[in-house]
Amino acid sequence: QVQLVESGGGLVQAGGSLRLSCAASGNISSINVMGWYRQTPGKQRELVALITTSGGTNTNYADSVKGRFTISRDNAKNTVYLQMNSLKPEDTAVYYCNAEVRELGDYVYHNYWGQGTQVTVSS
Image (cartoon, rainbow, N blue to C red; front, side):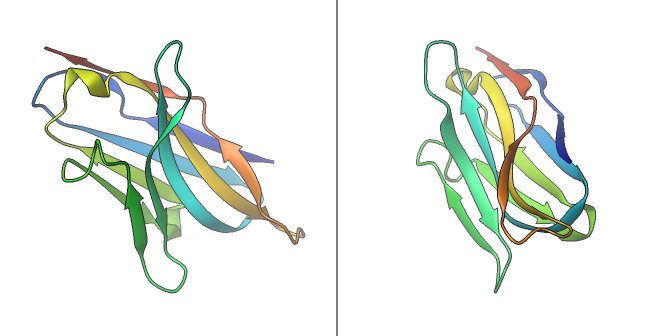
């Protein structure tokens, strides 16, 4: 079994910064895409940022966070990070980590989610 554990959420004033971390653990052979999503009450979960490192590092960001958020990854630690700068009240949400993981002895990738971490930006 694979677990994703997020950390780093909290309360910050507008214009401030936070860094989220998500560590994957368990019976891991390899991880393909890792990413961050967010969700507010009554709305669908939305993509924030994705990162792949196979064949070179590629990232993808939601338009709303481009230029303010940076996703990065430490493959040796099976960890993905989200550096969030110039935070706005509209960034307030529960942030979820996501990873496509292939477990030892398996041949396919499965999608896993973390438990979520609250980010609150006050105006």
